[in-house]
Length: 347
Image (cartoon, rainbow, N blue to C red; front, side, top):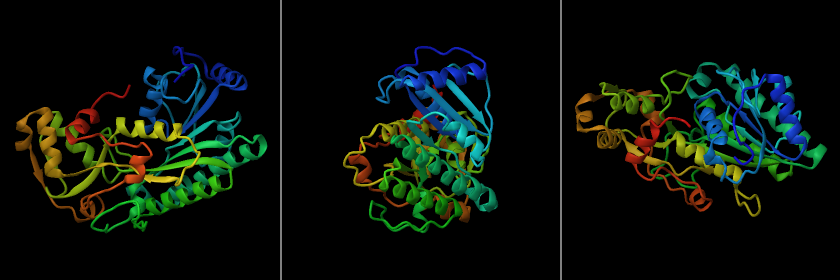
């Protein structure tokens, strides 16, 4: 991102002062919720790296990160705000200087949302509403609408899916997580209609390869199969070999998130897109892993049959996303490329 010449270590108070000073001079203020998560870390690294200089988001005055906690030292022009986004005080701190772009990635994911409705409502619904109200207050006070990129999910589509999913497929979520993401999409669209913000919701497919630490994703096996087989270990896949799913590498999803932030709002016919993921069976995915890591992979995998996992993550039909592709969103190209990218370091 233009304006980040180098990274220096500073105390938190000095970081906040520097951020506010640069923002006051007209530099951009970017906010990421869920910044210490899998995708949030990848997005933060990209924004701080040379690859973001040509990204078109302008000169960065400050990168404000929100999450429950962070590792490592403080960085210049990076303001960390630890705590829950369900805390109105934390949200107010994030908006204590005008925000240009809000990347809203934080959520309680599928499995955890099913087990703990109260927590998922607090984070996925109440906190999202509080963020949007903070953006609305900024627009009313300054006539400066925030660009909001919202990480929605293919869970809004529901299950079972029709024989083909395309841009006209009705949205019938069958998990609490999907229902809450759909409510978020609707709120964002309505706030944009009223001129209070400029939203872009992108429905994420399975993102690989997530680290081994579990944070409630029911789809973790889609990352595990790549990591375990690539590392030379055997893997017992919990779903049948013919199970099909939609996948995207974390590197490609960051590309799409940044593209959403850069898009011109002029003439946008829609505010939500299902990303053009790659469709694969488990057999095809294992073959791609073998193409990259050697044919011995084929003898180190067995398949099971978990009805719950297959119902939610193993019966994905062909996917057509002409609206997303016309808008400039993209997939990984092919499965071997996805496998290679999935295990690349985040930098």
